[in-house]
Image 1 (spheres, rainbow, N blue to C red):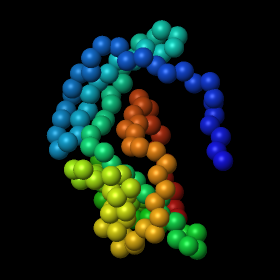
Image 2 (cartoon, helix red, strand yellow):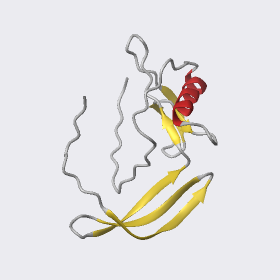
Image 3 (cartoon, rainbow, N blue to C red):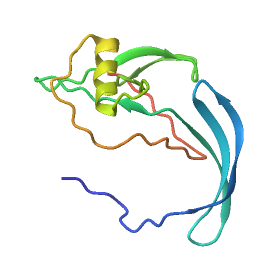
Length: 132
């Protein structure tokens, strides 16, 4: 069971055509105008690209499997779930299983798909850090 809060969120409307800011290696960054339900228009920088998958691997004993990787975007070594882009024609469950094997050496016994890939972009995204 899950609960989604708030339940009364209304969709915004895209206005105009996106302006491409950058495009490389199958990824893109573009500027898109959106109009909120109250009629106010705002610009959003949106990132997207090829399909990708992230896997939250849980062992039989309930431990999470995480990986340490260097990420150029933040210029740091980060701890994250295994993830990666899909090869041409590869399904997302196969992508998740492959990335788990490539990055950790673990084989997935079962993959439960929760959702398709979503490139989530906001004007202000909080960053959290902590220790495991």
